[in-house]
Image (cartoon, rainbow, N blue to C red; front, side, top):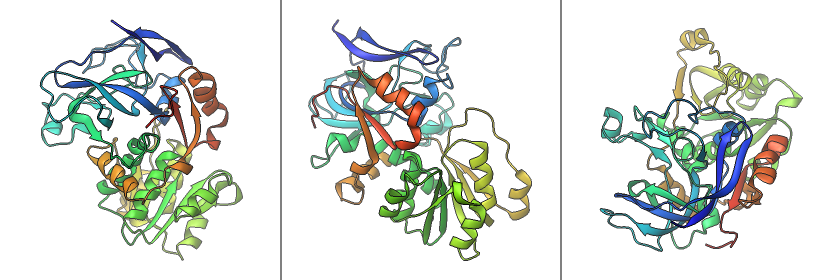
Amino acid sequence: MFSVKAAVWYGHRDVRVEETSRPSASPGHVVVEVRYAGICGTDRHEYVGPVFIPTARPHRLTGKTAPLIIGHEFCGVISEVGDGVTGWHTGDRVTANGTLSCGKCEACLSGRYNVCEKLGFLGVNLNGAFAEYVEVEAARLFRIPDSVPMRDAVLTEPLACGIHATKLMGGVGGQDVVIVGPGIIGIGALLAARHDEARGILVIGVGDLRRELVESLGGSYFDLGVGDPSQAVREWSHGRMADAAYECVGSQAALDSCVSMLKPGGKLMVMGVFEHPPTLRMNDFQEGERRLFTSQAHTSEIQEALDRIEAGEIDVGPLITREVTLDTLVKDGLEELMRNGERHIKVIIDIQEKGAD
């Protein structure tokens, strides 16, 4: 068995880049030689967690506990095809949906495997993609178009989250939309709302670091440090307030801000990951018949993200703010996000250190 390099999670702020066994393709699966991987907000939460990584009780679907290889945003080239896999060959350029599901529950059978009763994720409940090779279920693969560079394709997973969340709300076309949190998930929501032809999009964040990017993508920007966000939304919307708000931070303050910005009948989409259980002002929802939505990852929306990149609708380049290697992942990636998270949208890892597509 060949050994390969991987980033293994052992505990709180304890990720070790070490040699581990190269995976082999079990039936229905392929092995992907990973070219690029993206550090997700979930990875950052787990780095200082754990939040979802099982440490004592085995995961309900995979039966795994830590230590395990982290990472679920990735792209690469198929290096091995398991028995029973059709339509995929070695050398195919792919990315994948990192969800793990049972395939038997009501949610899975209806196509909503992202809310499986035993839901899991690569890199959280099973060995993931911060490694030179990763095993993936063939049914979760998406083919990368020849014209889309690998370095761009690695961002399709977070972009798919915004597309999926927007669909769940029934779309935002012609509506005033507010997004709290200008990280990659918030930027993905902005791009999805823009594609859906929202009337206006206001992104709210701390400081001015994201203003230029947000405005270049067709949104307006408000800095929390200069005033009351609810009043800013009132002025921006000419008194209408927001038809829809995306919470993309995972904090009590962001959640409260979103509630205060919604008009009666407005829609709140919660996308942030909360390290601590929040309190929701439910009376504000009931009295104004406001509607609460939540979103869990995505299903087929990676394909839509790939299509939009291929069509030139999304320029991924400005969203990548740092590139590291596996060897520098902890110091220059995870620790950098702890120190200066507000400076970054997406930190990616050049796994093979080839810069190859």
